Length: 331
Length: 238
Ligand SMILES: Nc1ncnc2c1ncn2[C@@H]1O[C@H](COP(=O)(O)OP(=O)(O)OP(=O)(O)O)[C@@H](O)[C@H]1O
Ligand SMILES: [Mg+2]
View 1 (cartoon, rainbow over the protein chains, first blue to last red):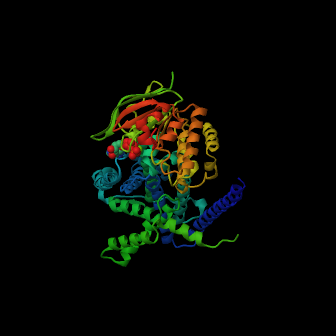
View 2: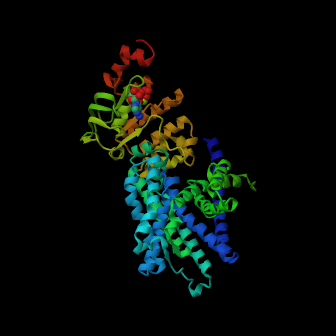
């Protein structure tokens, strides 16, 4: 018994220290995020805002893919639903913009639930195909209901204006709105995952059969994960509409869904920092590959993904974790 | 109402391949029943049919409640805990998360009580609560699988070859714990085991399964004394 005590203590201390470092890291990151918009030119502030928007969408995709072990090639469709829900509510019903966030999230959630019930009975390749179909059907559907959606022309909206008390410029105000929503989304996702429900999701991902014999209802949790992932996508889509001030069907093609999935995998599946790194990927990599080779951006894009996966098979989050461990520490 | 397990005319298989061809037996409440038989006899399939993992015809009742036709999660809710062949622990999750998942169908403060109880049965696990289940040794994983099953507060515990891949000493320890659980909690146990000695050592009744049929039934002592069984499963002649 005495030997176990001797080793138990350092382990506890070590865990404690890792915990402290993690909070310190997060605090630092948040401080940097608050400081950044005062130092950057508006275009860069806009880019950072979009990284956060994609990070919220990826947070949802991460629940489904990284934590519940299901695949979706249609995440962009729910992003679009959130974006259009916000746009239509603001355009046709002249709703004040803060109200569109919960509504867009709710619409995406309900749609996710409705589509999740049949889709989540499928697995692997079949699920991939059905979710892909959702993404493919969306664009013509948006063009079809022209009265509501503005058809191929899309809808143009006034961007949310900063209140006078804030003293912020428009881009800064949008940035801080998005940052607040992103932080809230991360806290929500983290608390979901720490609960009994989170454990059930992990059980489904790691071993469906074993989860089932322990009383976990597979179809229920898969569907729930699908609906949640849609909800986060919808919220992100809504913020997208605020930030861009314009929606059109061609912004939400299948490409978006595939880029989102690629971004998540590259960022790091199942980790909390994965979506942020993935957000950077979704924001910058497609345009970088466009710059490198205008003729075949897809090829460069693909090569970049392969390169990242080769260097960091667990995604950028895993790579970052490994590098941090290598930094020598003071005792 | 007693919590006897009554199985009658159980027919089960995979797709077109029928594996069990009418299996019937009864296990009394609080007893241990051993299922012996050669590889491929259908022992694992029998346990899977009991826990709802494979579709079965015939009837299975536990304490009068029908289990047949229910999906696995519903069977689990009725108090049936299955420790599958190869354990089925969740490797990336910690030991504690695995254990808490075991109590998944229940809520409330009793979960903490049950964790404490499992720690008493398996002190090894208590030391490794925050460790990933995948990093445990084979023996520890089997303990975890059993501990997790206990978290369900099962009325019926199904064990599929708990000794698989374990050192003799660990296997004996494991069976000692199964017996303690059975005696202290009055949990009914159905254990499938290649190590017939150990299984018969804790069982009251035993059945020998061959190609999907029960070919021999009796008390553990009778089975132990049977010449055929001795040759096939115990490795010596009487
Ligand atoms: N998932 C499956 N799909 C199809 N056939 C299966 C499946 N699992 C088992 N079988 C077949 O069912 C028969 C009985 O298998 P089972 O696993 O029940 O035997 P067992 O008695 O547990 O054997 P062992 O002692 O080797 O574990 C075998 O012929 C096997 O090939
Ligand atoms: Mg077997």
